[in-house]
Image (cartoon, rainbow, N blue to C red; front, side):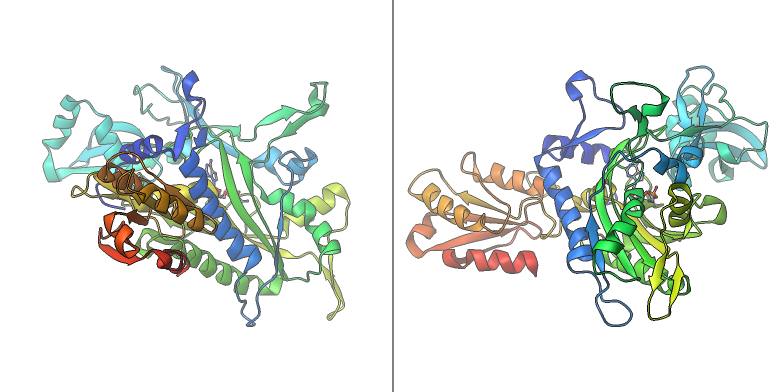
Length: 505
Ligand code: GAP
């Protein structure tokens, strides 16, 4: 990701090249919902598959030198509504919101900052700004000002200081100003984030159900089924990838915060004494995962939650945060690793009366396992990969290329005949038919070669194999490397091996 990256450029590329489209666009869109185009679904599936491989198919080696045990699950999106009473979501899954009394806009109270500009301790102006990280609040506030007000502030030069407080942090009785129209905001009120619906023909309170706001509860509901049917012993994990729905007050920043999104969650069941060891273990494993699939170490940090930030179920939580363009120089959440204690199993045991205890045969004791939960956003992870890959380059026709790690790239290689004649398309087709057996590859025959390279740069294809006049003579092809623009010739019959090594290497 370059410093000059802007979200507008990235969003525009995503639309133009088929990564992400606004949902229901022909009807004017719908706030907080996005559709993944042909390239976007490919990229998202690659992130999902890398996670599934790292969790379920080839889980990490544990502290005892043996692979840890994790099994997969795909639970229903709609569950018995008692699930969400027991989990605390009906009573406690709330965000504080504020409304503007003038223009009626609605905001999340923790995302509206009041930026007060002071000179020699005297207040010059207070401006409301919507932001996902305090670091960008001042810039947001500045950019919302008209030029007259901006000049009024800028004339104070170095003497100008700013104090940032979210609306939530204001003293009781004090309300903020609307970031859109400066009107007075209401006091924060709680707003439940769960989408509800009705199941069955009669739409009354008894038929009310919820779209899951997290995939985790489906895992807790099936913990006993897995224990009774699979050959697992504590410690073990259950992993799940799937859709989650939250009626976010202010969906923002492209696919970062949407109302329908995907999560990749794993609940790790262990005994209480081992919690500190597993918490540290999963923290490191998860950071390594994001680096391995292509995020730069410098763009990732750990951030421990303060006590007052913890979710209702959580005893401790650390976030892995990524430096998104809209949070830079600050960071925004990518994944949370939470110590959920035995909260969920206790709650479901109490509410359902089903026994959730684990019998530890070697030590002849029964207990409710404690849980460490690495919970990440699949759609948010996809966004991080898009941000990281976006690389402006004035020197090339496309002016930008997507520098995905080859194993994550939506298209691994393109086969391009230099011209659509002289037998070149036939050789290209043969090569394409061979490569597609193992990899996602494209063949592109029409247009000038420059335009075709430009398109492949913009969709982040790491290798282009070009069939040209020399191929007809000596059975070699040109390989064009996306990142360096280097070109080399390799034998036509060595292309498949070359690609295998580059993608898996
Ligand atoms: N089971 C725990 C749980 O759901 P969370 O921190 O609320 O924890 C986990 O969500 C991850 O899901 C977040 O780290 C984030 O990546 C993703 N996520 C949460 N809300 C989201 C939203 N509205 N849009 C996109 N991703 C979201």
